[in-house]
Image (cartoon, rainbow, N blue to C red):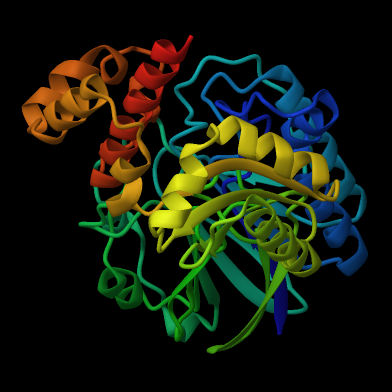
Length: 401
């Protein structure tokens, strides 16, 4: 039997863009959270001494790889070297080999895969292990690299493990790089596929395990829930996976049923009680409140104060382990919460009638910007509704000042 750790998408030194309204102490904790999550993984490895560690891409948040992030990463690798733990790294689209950065020397226990699919071998207690992988030579790898991976040769008696930073062909919820199909991975005959790139923890297939561990630390409300890595025990064709949490702060969403909500203290108490349950389950959390089933009373209630005022009151009365980040409203009820002015209605109606070309024209400066464009996901209907709502709020705020 062999035992190893599988992690990916560390995104060290993530800037956490768009989160600016926290107190300095909490904002500092958030900005340090990717490093703190990495530290948890290193400590776990030191204590459990696995046979090796696999890190499958996007170690850094950008191709420039800040000096601070590289230094912290290398210090962790050096501690694993002191514990005699080999580490295998394949770089992904965010930290590709073509980026410009000041390089650090990695310790001798680290193997980094190059831009072509390579095979690295090691022997653990007499068991021969072959690990296959590659690093992105540039940010956009559209080629199906799976075709370059060798097939396992069972006659050799080896355990074959594939490392692949990429996504399922045809997947629309995430940028598709190095596309693959489950069938293509299974066909290789490997005993384990260590994937990276998708930040949601997923087991795509059981035998053999095809696994996304997700990232070590959530970075925004679309990366909800406890994050971490997998500890894997593998013997021939039998695998056992244990999830190890590393989140320092957990992003989560509370769904608040407003069917009979008409009083402020009633809604505030319900939100606070729900937050306590989340914190008891997940630890320190950054929470969105999604209000649903908004009737006439609730519409009047929310129209009486701005989102910022509601959040301020929630934050004043909340435990330090919970931070309320935003209020959200069920999509088909957002328009009911906009102040009923002719100008707001006119803008809202115009935006509702925009087609795809209209949206592209309005947002082309953002999506074509050299720095921001590559990091933006496709505009969804939910995003359009939220932009429409925010436009109405901005107009209403201007009219009231």
